[in-house]
Length: 141
Image (cartoon, rainbow, N blue to C red; front, side):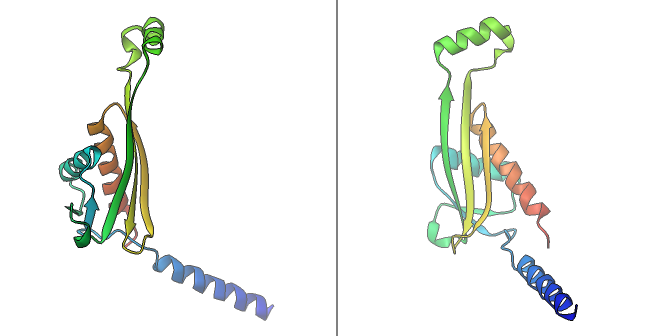
């Protein structure tokens, strides 16, 4: 019984220690964002949404790295015609913009990731910025 209590106490200590050392996104950290089309939209969205990070396009000055993959899709003519016939004016625009974003530190540790699918590049960038700002604010201190 004594051994079991000792093992449980040791596990609690290890789990507690690992939770305390989990990497965090520190407010006002310098983050590198590529100067791609989506990167520029994301930089503007981060300023607009007041994300508490300092954005740079100089990779050497950054302590965090934001990488993205994105693509724009437009539905084909046949698909668009079918939607308009089925749903009328409520068929939507037929366009979408998808972005997958990861945020890592200098050690390559993944700190945050998000996927966004919106109707255009601006909305996708604003969605990513909003979710990043929420994540930073909700982190344990």
